[in-house]
Length: 254
Image (cartoon, rainbow, N blue to C red; front, side, top):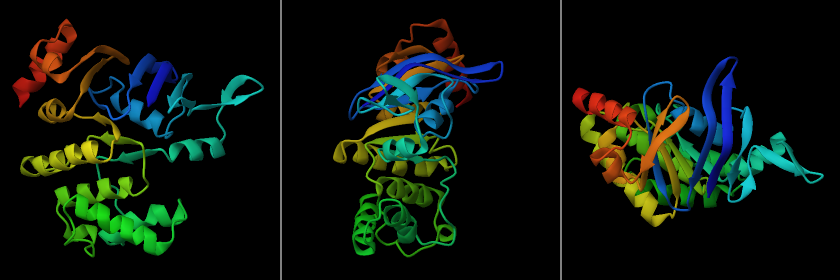
């Protein structure tokens, strides 16, 4: 579903991603872990086209996202091409980013109506179904200020789903939540992955969360994948010294 082919991202002399090769299968849930500055969030930002790649190509469903074909060669994608391809991708941010002047229902309807040009009745029906799916059927007319952090995060998830993405990006979605509500968001993520056949890519500092929901965990270090594999191996028997060092420090801190 998603392929990074020798993708690099640099800011001046600072290389944040260094020729990244990463393939993500349809319906696979991949978690990215690693120290600050290792390039984790840059992966999501490039895939969401919030940043431009410095080199390499990102593909979604076998079609170039960051580039387009012209006269048999790949050139930098136009804004029109990016918009068309980006419709396949949804992102849920760490700080929710809900519109404060809109109800939960209106937040979910906004994208389908104005971007997908869906009829308001159809967008409303879709949004109500998704808010029910994430356990908020009794909160559809509430404004974000009247919702808890966990509830706001679930609205943000429903809002992203309302755009019918094939790939969902989750950026530290539990870091702003109290520990007791992380479980409710975890339950929603599991449900979405199974019911919607979504491909999901998640950046997280919550090792327990990554262990619970992931099919594969990628440990990033210095802009590269240092080690990857199923969560039981990464967390139970990490092979690389840098992975062991990182996990030891993180798990001790918790």
